[in-house]
Image (cartoon, rainbow over all chains, first blue to last red; front, side, top):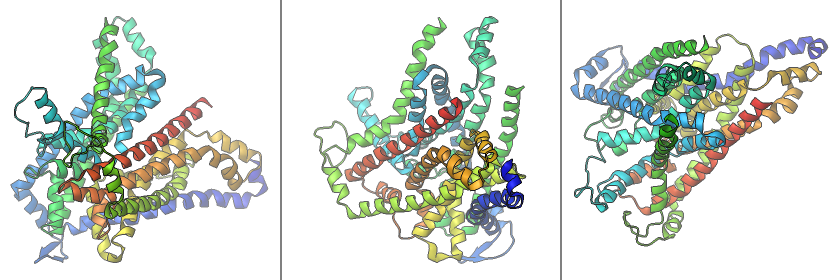
Length: 296
Length: 265
């Protein structure tokens, strides 16, 4: 450390100052534009409104009212169910694909992986618009099925229903699921699989007892992100869902923008946020446990 | 026997998933050339006319230019915030690192709708910012988180021995940074800059709450998707999608190449 010997004083000051200077702008930014707004929202959820005017107070009325409205319960339930369904569907679609890319793709690995993620970067509004072209009564899927003579009436449940919301969400979050799965499967040494086969385990047993447990961290991380994003997603249900059965995010938006009841909307947002944080907190334990098992 | 089964089943299944991923994109690009005013099968004649009319629609092009401008600013701002922070997080021992990482992860896991509404509440204190400044602020909050996390994971794989070697040979922090660190990290930084741009360019929900009378391209598309959709919309979308794919693919291949080189070094 000759640099340190040459200018010990300035160097020691730099080792303290540089990290602080590097971190401070980002931390300040996130404090002002992320933590502060979320804190304000939490505070606002305890206020009340009178004739569309916000009145500062500290009341749990907003939360009580929310839990007394069955429509809100239904939308929350629909959101949770949809998110679970989307997560499971994404896992089923993503696992074989991630396995192929991680273990069988050879020199095509990088390209195949990039090809999975690339659609994720296209604006969500465009991706959802594309699904409307595919799913509508005169959409591509119905027209193709009718041209093939498989059906005589177009399927009307394909668009503007929970089905289309689920298709749109699976499409949106599939790339997010492949990434952690790919990383987890890539970390499984071929020799471990080989060892299981050498010890006379069949392909099914090798998969269930070796490959699946070792890829569990990827499965859980992917599921958590899929679930969390699916729970709060707004654009897809708003453009594909049809508006008969509202998801929780749509009810929140409605509360803010049409009913102009900000405290009540803020309380719903806090509930959504609490669900997200609870999911993350719960899964942290699993992720740590899962990765601990692979390390030992 | 296992080889025989998996030999074709796995690639076939994966091919179907790839078709699922690219079908909507193909459909948009296809219908951008469809001569009919209401897109549908069968395709009778193809035309380039929709591209011409979309590019001469001043409202659409205006929203495209607004989106481009705001996304460039947000990408530069968020990379400028993220790069030094990621370097500190990855290379310096520090206390409360997990707390800082949690704060950075926050905007990623927070539902976009909630962030949009929370920022709407914040901006009641500064209503003048509503419009383009507010959109940049909001997008920078989101993309700086992504950018920090991506750069952090890139920098973790960076060999500290290079820095230590330079310092041992008498280089100070600034010389080390300019001559050793910067040449090694700039591909990752450029890639993250491109991805932050792409992300900010396409983001809708938060921008929608911040917009006031400003119209970004996703907002213009949202409005038109709620009414009759002209094929011009598909033509412009097809152009934007192809550029987006090119940008994100090159950025990701860049990151992959960089990681591989680091691992081999």
